Length: 288
Image (cartoon, rainbow, N blue to C red; front, side, top):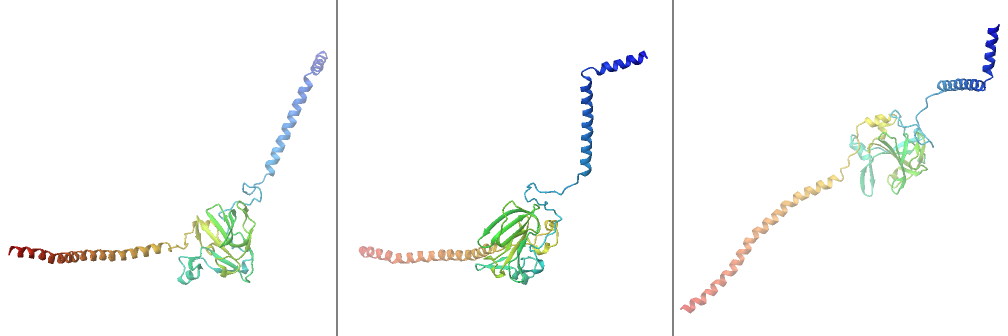
């Protein structure tokens, strides 16, 4: 019993020390806090789900354009749309190429897009064919309002002949968003209310109708069949031909001038001969 009493007395004395209870309290608090943090971190790992990628701009953020995105016709109601003028394709027949020429200011030029109108001839909503960022939004005196959207893959979509727009440079556009209303323009006014739609790959126009319902990646890998404008080259060629024709004429003129020179000299010599004889005759008379 004495041993038991001694042990109990030691425990009592140990508990009476001032630092014992604070130490025990701190240790218990540390254990409880560690257990709580571990439980919360484990719960977050179980409930965390992957999210879709978004642009850095949180305002009006849209998913980043993917190469698998399918190109759509830039109209809200495809069944009511009609192509008034097609793209000028260098591989098309002469008749199709002639129909794809744009006439303005007594000049014919190749159509670098397609003109889409409504079957009833009325205006309609123009929608984004592909997602991207607005890099151009302005009014042109000949083309009407123009909006250009860049997808970030070297592909741009341009919407021209719009009646009005609310988009500004830097805005994010998702496929199917309304870009503006179809309007009238000075160039292509014969199409009435329409949208002039262009697709470009690395700055070169491609045929939009070829890539409807195809992916953006298909545009990137497709060969370029855009029209080649030879109008600037032809005058230079004609001038060169005319210059070649003028050269012989110039040479002939020079030859003619050289041929005339001896005749002139002979005429001068002929005129001088009588004068010479006249001067010699008085001398002969004096000698006589």
